[in-house]
Image 1 (spheres, one colour):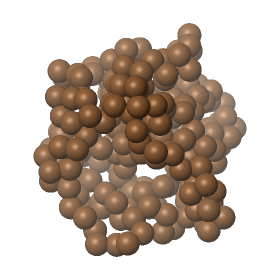
Image 2: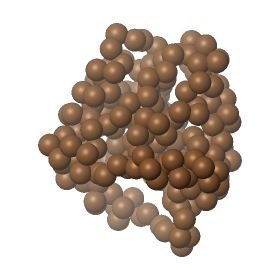
Image 3: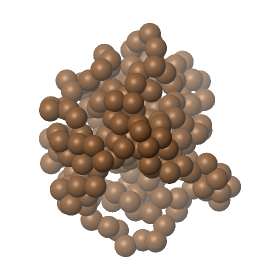
Image 4: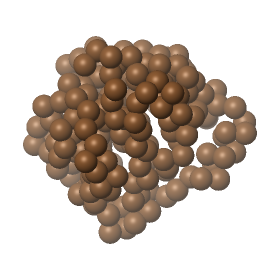
Length: 212
């Protein structure tokens, strides 16, 4: 069994994974969902990684999962602690030295044109709760160059969401190929698949561990 380290996206919290966590535990896995210090103006990438590494502690057999903006943090964690696998879910893939604000143009990001790009397929009660829990992105990390010189030597999967209006499937497929040279896996659901299809996401994540 694996230890899943779940890293939320921009404006999010560990709560974003609340429906996925028990489903992974039901399958025998250990789970660590982390609140990044995104509201702390003094927090850089090193503080983001320290937060995750501290939460992981001495646990092993790690599968590090980054959602959306969490794609910037997940590889930094894998560069610090031994991980068996990294899974990027509807995620941004940074390049060495890249700034968050430069990523959009450098990655050739294409807007879908939809007004609601996050929660269109999430139940209304969960949308309201997500809005209540939303946090600011005030950390200085977003103004710092992404610090790795090379991608960590960790097997990496990219899981795109077929109904994603933020990172559309066609764009995400090309992003994974251009940045990592891999073919993306696919799952039904929108950008917040952890809220709209938690059972399916947990099954997919658990399935990845079985292939290690």
